[in-house]
Image 1 (tube, rainbow, N blue to C red):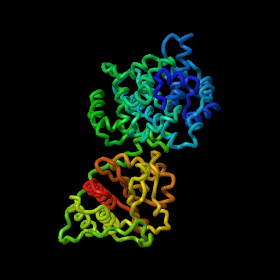
Image 2: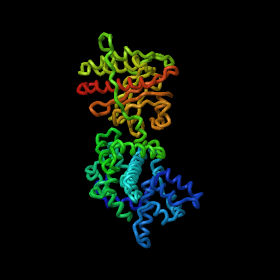
Image 3: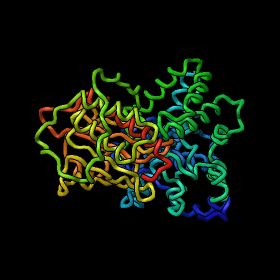
Image 4: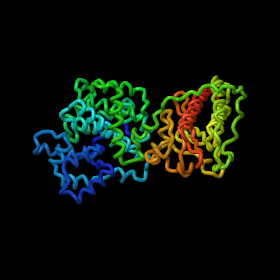
Length: 499
């Protein structure tokens, strides 16, 4: 990292480098060339509002011309397009480079740049919605301020590949800390953003609305709340600071916090439907993963206590044929739950604890194939420790996935969460699977849930039935989650022991 530069140094460093736009934006501009006479400024303004770097290009072009002709600063994107002209907009902006041209063959690096852009988009959408609710006479100004709040982050991760490691994992990156930014980059991203605004002659209002010191300015508060809330939601809908965020916004809008949450989810769901990059999912994509109440089954009546189950066989042992459904056993399931609960004092070994969990899933719930995978490779990979129901020759026996991209398994590792992928949500969740996951697990529905010990991810449990006559159902999913939660609780008592 180049820690010797300050904000002015970074701006000067990028002065001769073209600022890119999103490839999806460029494709839309190219399509509009054939119908330029029918394109309105409002249509192009909406396009610019979807790409913070295009919006910056547009305002930079118009406000630089202001010095020699236009009297007032231009903040509105629609007004900027009208001043520039629709034809000139399409011609100039259509020539801009794209992030795909640099990172098209580097999906992990590109995903990090996209994440910075997505932060801008989400903050802008929320700020606009809240401004409309507050009856702000110019909500588009607040929207643009939020859209450009992270312009420095977008450019830093695009122009400086060497700093990208500092933004991993993207939902809890060390370099999101202003103190570390000052130390490693020579300035905070907030200061760099202000330097960019000044160098590019962007309106002073945008600087004012992005100034954290403007606490008396309600419009600036809307921008700051939107930006802060987006960072928290990125880290999960269960972020501990989210209730405070909701209460703050509720106070501004004079509504209840649960109404604020409903508004946020509605806005971000609408954004998710138009966001063109499935490799960088929006927080709305993870709403199906919100954990509910974990049911605690009543102790079985009349089931005599039995010794703890023997350790499960070594990993990847052959099991019964996939085509043969396994009949669930409520008695076995309740017995397993009872045994686990009676040994949450750390008296079971790791193998004994996981043996009980997998026995409960396989023989109790009737799940034909079960995988317990542990974090490995310095927390950069999740790899099978035990596989039940697959031979050594089957792909499932080699269940292992890198956690260097924001796919479904990567997201699960941020918070205790479970997913039941079924026909009801397959269209939404299938694009988020790791690239080779279907080759590993085959087709069909499945359960998967992360396991955390003392707020740290240790692994995950995967299970399916692989049966056409015995499909997964809600009761099985609740039982699967129950055992996964017990696994985490049990392993927590073994944290001080060698696994």
